[in-house]
Image (cartoon, rainbow, N blue to C red; front, side, top):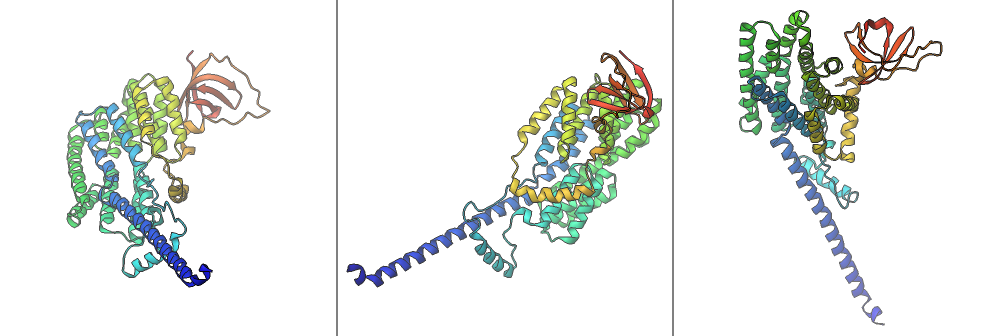
Length: 451
């Protein structure tokens, strides 16, 4: 009876409660969208104003300068480089800023908000990887960190032509272009790039980095001219040039003295050559050079240095797991405490992957690497030799005593030391410290029994 008498009042109360609840709900959705916008703004500010990638640029020069002045040992430099690279290699994994609640319900509201932002000429609210411009830069940074400087420059140039960036990002791109040119030996271009940033973006933090890099570049260049002019060709000269990031000049000196040098100096020569090849984007040849040292002169201190370079190359490349495993296996015999420290740091500094957020980046990077890989595993002779094909049935196999160890020199200049496991008319199979290696007989220059 009472309900009938107050039916209209109850209806009005329910409608009012519904409207109020809807308003509270919509306000809460809007609040979460605004929180997302704030998080994205802070993330973007961190990426642009305090660009962590710039640390790697300065650190490269700083490490080389300290080593050149004998203020930093190679052991310390390797640990620092591993630490910095471990941090930088994870900077692409920006944490996805998403809606903890209303993930799907917020889509219509977000669409309306972005529509009004577009009308008022403001950037839309979107995740980092929804922006093609950020994608280009992340891929370019990846190539740069892997010493593929020419490829990185191509992507930077393409990004500047196709995408729209704010002044902070443009300045950062020009800075990275200058760095790439400096490592490639294009000193005039690099200097002009740094001066351009200083002149046109003097009010930005990136201008300070450009000034620091320019000072390093000029100092290195001045010292390089002095070394080339006044020092005779020697291992010491090639090592100095390598520390001055003059890789082509260092290789030129090595090519002149290599055949005349003492056999005792071969590990040192191979190590310097590997460093130069790395800097010249020939990583596969560099790794073969390093592994030659490990196989041929495992007791040499350069075997430790070379194995660390193999590991660093492995964790920088997306497909470098085999290299990391190779380095770990090498170290079981080398027993390098610095290597153990590097592995420990890389493990501790590894960030948890944001699968949802990095999937798009990995997909785009995979497309790029299918055409321009930073590391072509198939070109690394030691890795390709670790997986021999099964012998044909017609092969007549003569098994040798496993205690017989031989040293094999190949026409490519590779040296393998190991116990003979199998021997046929077409090939021999050795058990070496890097695994089982199958060597065709027509590739063997000499075979010497050493045990």
